[in-house]
Image (cartoon, rainbow, N blue to C red; front, top):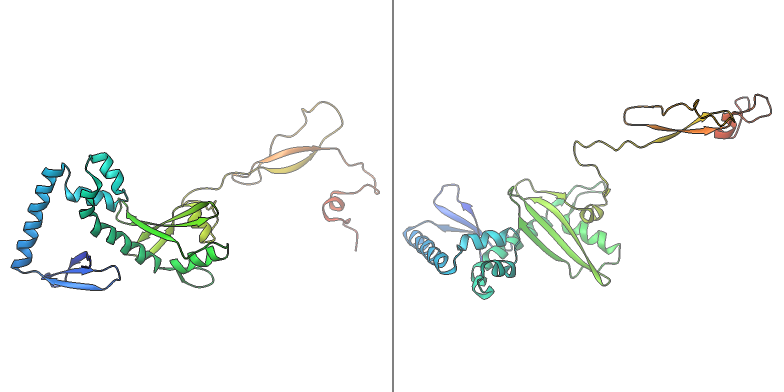
Length: 256
């Protein structure tokens, strides 16, 4: 028997739309038999809650958020094999969302690529075996989904995570590994952040005395751009001494 994922009501509000893990849609007409079955399922879920001490809805919501069955079993005291019967549809939903994310187009300078093509291409260039990639997804509090891929490398593993918006069909890197696969800068600034001010060296001529009171304080060459004074010896005032142009550019202003 194939598990289906509930998508929503039909446009005329007379049926329920479901999809399988391959993306094929199915329509179930809402009739008396379906209503009775739904009511019976709701009653059974209430009975399970009294029996288990936790509702089926809560179990499935926690799995949908990415919790493992072993974690829920340990927290609730319910044997894992008793939780399995409620987990299948949710894991199918997570697999479906991961597949939707894999097929989403990502805009790149060299042309749009699906997420899976971009990931496999980037990993192939680094001699990573892409035949055993493991994909997963879990729902976020804001309604979007986190989508992750794991790969083996040497004796360790790598993990990259993105935020997937199924409505907008968009993918955004969530960690440095995802940015690395997208060939984005891992130090890329977050929106509305400002670059850190970095000091710039500025040469300030000084005399040979031990008194440093004449050293000018740090100057500012622009907003957020402090400079650090660097004392240098004064240049003798004769025509045979190299000027700053000679030092910086390798010639004198009068050179042709």
